[in-house]
Length: 449
Image (cartoon, rainbow, N blue to C red; front, side):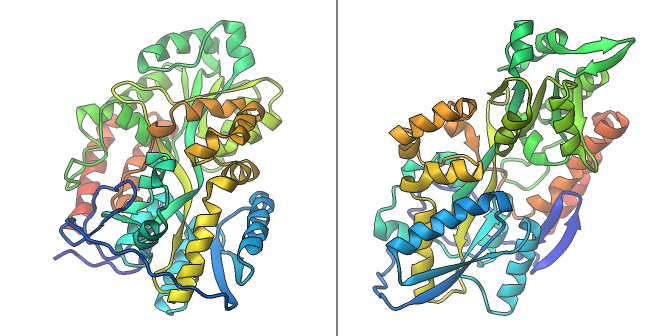
């Protein structure tokens, strides 16, 4: 029997970690055409019954949309009201993702839940596994939703154990934003493979009296979202294939961080970590102290608006693989809602993620389009004319993959984040610390056996 940790919350270094009943983990599927039992074996799923009604109904949408996203949200609400005048959607801002997740817990405990909500992508397995969210498969089957119109990785990020618990809504991925003006002057391109990095470092880094005055590039160290892809691209993995033990300490998984240690020690690489690290990285880049910075694609607009040089964007470099992980949040239906509320919630989820509004929504909130048909449309072509920096992301559309799907991931990732922190702040060799992090990860995993 699995160890039960129902609705406990622990404040970890990486944010709020939600730890609930542990029932194993499994691979996401594309389209959710079947559900799964405790052994992850496919079981038939029937299409949802149509709940036809034009009776007025009000549902709540709990969200974490920042003020800059509200113009886009208000537009989407107005368009939804035109299509479904009998459905009123009340948007309720619940703070950042940790606050939202904590309030969802309280709402479930009080049996008073919203019909639809945001969920941060790495927390989807935790909520889905606990029965908080509704499997959307019956509605997908009923309405023949074109699941293959989404990026495979983006839709899979909101599935767990064979069930489609949500759709991608505000999606980002990490990219390298670079000073194109500078790189053009130097006659260099951003590295596309790990083999390119050493030559890039030599060409771009500036040193005076043995001190670095311009770093070739910078990587954030405060969130595993940024460096998990480096681990994977180097041939490593976070957990073993059966997800029973840590793999962060294996030679393949250590390749990236050993390179980080060398590049940082040699003065080529900057690692952001600690209070104010994100703002510090931005200012160093905009001030010319860093030539290329890994950051969320949601910041591309900010960099373009604030830089006094031309901005370029490159997908993260690859080695054995070349992927980047999905960030941001999706939209999900609460299982505790009534049947009438669920039908209204489904209509709202479809509307918010529809191809019809995909480009306008993405551009208004600064996140990525998620629908292939929208990207290939005339509106999509105009979008890329306005925002050519995003082309680098969509050249690798299906290389944007889900994060590790394990319900303990928000908890145990903090231990190898701390290793990056020691490297960033104290230049400690990660080879001395990562085995200790692996031991702590294994202790946490043991609670889920």
